[in-house]
Length: 128
Image 1 (tube, one colour):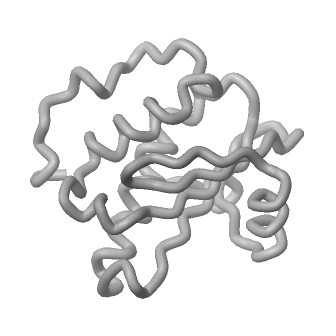
Image 2 (cartoon, rainbow, N blue to C red; image 1 turned 135 degrees about the horizontal axis):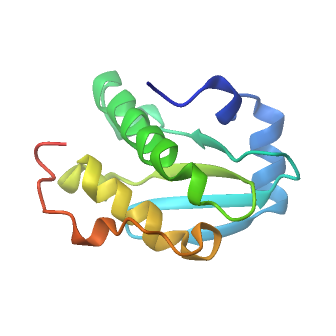
């Protein structure tokens, strides 16, 4: 089961709107933009440029981030649109638990009180 198409941002004009009007969070591994969307559910867009690596690596990052978002979407207190742009430093720790941890740490205000605490997850970044 993956993130349904209704949970994804797919149009260029939506990305431009979020970047222009949304809030920005800068982390060592990712650049995040987010904006409250006034809809019933949150949506995610992952942008990975060709400079990041080959297509296998780019799609892996997208899949991992979509899965982490899908698993925690019910915990979001107010629906938002999120754009994720990974930085090259993420290649060192490319694993599901690491990406999940970064997602939760950077979006504590919109996730509310998460019952799952990925920071307690074992460090198996090479396996994810």
